[in-house]
Length: 264
Image (tube, rainbow, N blue to C red; front, side, top):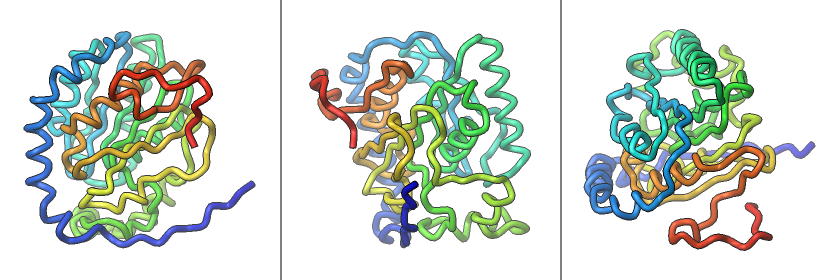
């Protein structure tokens, strides 16, 4: 067994953090221009996709993404837990009930798409109930930083979690091993322009042969409206577990990668 060394992170540069709102707005604007490109993606197969919001976000923050998934032919589903204010047992148990209900209602596994902290929730849901999960796609989720040292919103997180200041303590209380990949196809989407958490905190090390890290260009908060992220999500949702193939940059242009290509 190979032991991965613990990485030390610092929060992203202050300039990246300060420009987050402006860059997110520009990503939303570009999304409209990218319509023809995104519409070229093959339609979905109608399976449910549970979308989980990031820290301080609720279902309203994922409307654009869910509308996009609906247009592709999937069944986008809300997490139905109100605002995501942190790692809390009641939120996890609530969204777990939603996941299991969807799997039973549709008679199939459910894809999970989570932004930031929502992606960490999604990974833990898949770890606890892999039989109900088709795949996990996370957007800027710092699962590789259990201490929370790589975040520019640490003080805000502590404000909303006064009785449980330490995020690592919350993870331990929940029994979460965030650095370990869930036992299902897992995609981590990250950006070096992330102004909220260090991009290296979003990188999966080790795991199994259906784990991948995909870099996009954009901000942290804008990932839920980022055209490149949308393309990757749509491409990944077409994958089947038994015939899963890693993402290849040629997919952006509709170029099929060679058979011998393997993700490393």
